[in-house]
Length: 305
Image (cartoon, rainbow, N blue to C red; front, side, top):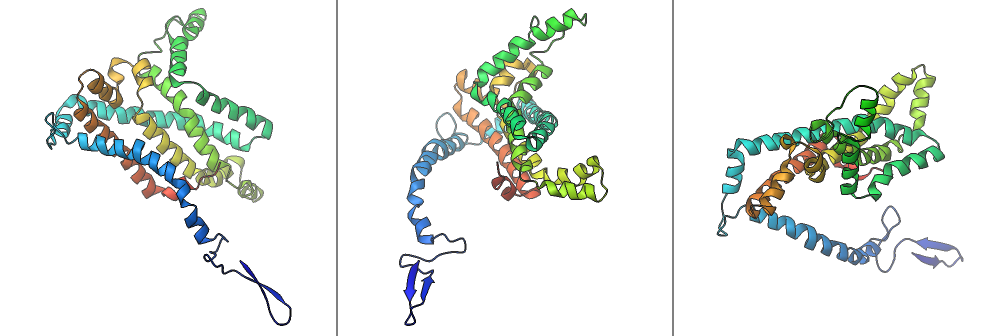
């Protein structure tokens, strides 16, 4: 930006600059270009610790034990019924975790987004508190609570209801998975709900709509990007989960991550484990593609907290 003085003594302002032009939002393009080097450390870390390992995993999935190119790892996976069953079970558990997290998380996020500052701060602390604790500690905590002589079964026995198997089965696995994934669902929903203008609902009610009708026809559609984004995030994370299914699930509830760990830790078959990891990655990319098709990634990237 430069100052110009004409022969009449008037002072003008020129938007042109010697080192670049100014775009619509007032930011110099040359300034932006000159600051791009600040991204180099982050890009270098992504390249070393994300892009290269991912490329290596994909490459290993097409190698045999002698290092030659082969597709036998994928053929072995899809030719054995046990692996297909585990793949379908992984999708089923991830889907159920997403549904239950949404059922529990949506009302919680709604109250969080529409409550006063004091209640909101307290509830946000409760939601964020699990992030401050190791997931292994949290899982062991639930195992202590749900074990046969834990607090839940002790209370049931006191009431004369008898003991219930709450761990090492599908029920225990769902409790652990939903508890672990709930903060991701709530925070994603909350970020979208905070951006909803409450005047829309107020106007609907002023025109005669009931509270439920105004919520269902105005508020809920506006919160759909949060529902879709939270569901996508929870499903992807749940599909690759290892600790909770391993510790709280039964023998028939083990997921693909457990198969990968077994192939690496016990059989030392890194190539087959890489093929399973690539299949899991394809499922993730398919979910992203579905989200982009239905909702659009712009809604996910522009959500505000």
